[in-house]
Length: 124
View 1: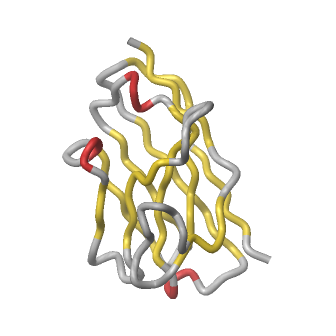
View 2 (view 1 turned 135 degrees about the vertical axis):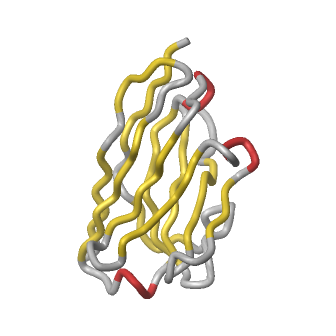
């Protein structure tokens, strides 16, 4: 059974940083693309970033480019999201996702498994 466990969320002031981590188990981690999505109450889940199997290729949504960095450690079965220069509009529940090896669709349509989420709150 696949398990994705996120950690690292919390409260931070605008301009600050947080590092989210997702630990995966129950799957051959290096065989899948990994990523992060986020969702605010009443809104649709939004793609944030993904990273391909080897970690050599990443993609971020425009609103986080230059501020968020996604990385993975295939030896430890973890994927991290370093979030810098945080803004109040980054306040969301952040979800770890695992999906198709070629990369995650922005819609989330090829995500196989989701974590339960971790809350990030950015105060102004």
